[in-house]
Length: 71
Image (cartoon, rainbow, N blue to C red; front, side):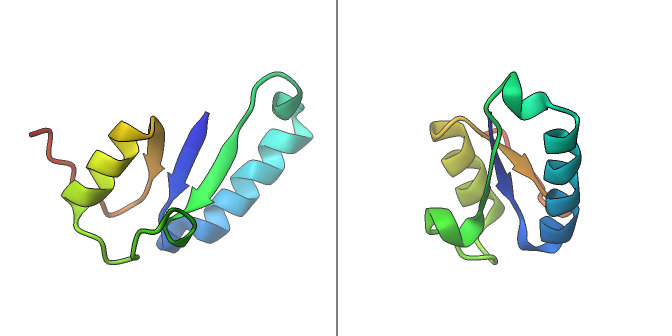
C-alpha cells in the first residue's frame, strides 16, 4: 500500500510509520510513504492533478488540506 504524503503532514507521517513499524505491520503488509517531490509533484500542485496522479498510480493521499474533485 502506497501513501502520498503532503508536506504539511510529513512529521505526522514519520510518527505514524514508526508506530506501524513498532506494531509489526510491515512484516505483514508492504507500506510505503512517498512525498510529493519524490514523485515529481510540486507542493502547490492543483488538487485535481494530485487526485489524478494518485488514482492512476493507486496511491492513497494523506493530506489535511486537499479538496478532491471526482470528475
